Image (cartoon, rainbow, N blue to C red):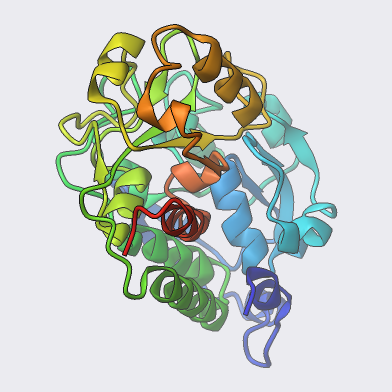
Length: 328
């Protein structure tokens, strides 16, 4: 059963238009904010790819006025639906560009998107009567510093399932939300059944070859390693994506390198091809065990962030570890 299959389903009694006609007001407490939603949104704008793909997977393309901030191509099963929704910007749009869409609901995957220095603050939208929503996976960490935040408690898939439930509730399509969660849970079970990668060390590289962003202990990569029984070589770092020098990386010499294959153009070495070219030519990294044996796992940026694509990360990493002979 695919995500696209869930997205296309519109069962009786679960139609957003029916709910909207009846009003169906909702009050939602999210990340310390209370949003009052008069009825299922008709002109939603999602400001990060993770949020956009949840809405598309819930079959809500006809209720979306725009999307923004993409790191990867959209999920294959969602391409047709995504093509019907305006992309306001590949990266962050201006506040004015979003307001031009006359949104009645704005969602984001990260607090920084709806904070100072982002598209606009939640208060700026709410002052105009536009309710906002931020993924609970992001506000569960400390975002007060200058980086990507840090986590005291490891993230779990439950935060992602909660986001799906919240958004399904906002749009009045709760049954679709539960079906999507059921599909994701089944995929996780299938990918991790009887796998044991204990003793296998991994490193997750998101982007930038000059000062690489690597995964700390407790974000989406932590979901992947814990599901497989493997170990992240930087499990001692609680920052979401700390920047660590290559000498320290080579010193820890992981068995496997999980590499972000991004389509955006913001940092150096965004694509997997550029990352691998760097690894195999740099004198510090080319002697690492994973590089010499080409033990690379290529993941989308979304799979390495808390999103429905994290399940894809579990599946692909599990399959690779089995192929490398590093999992029982």
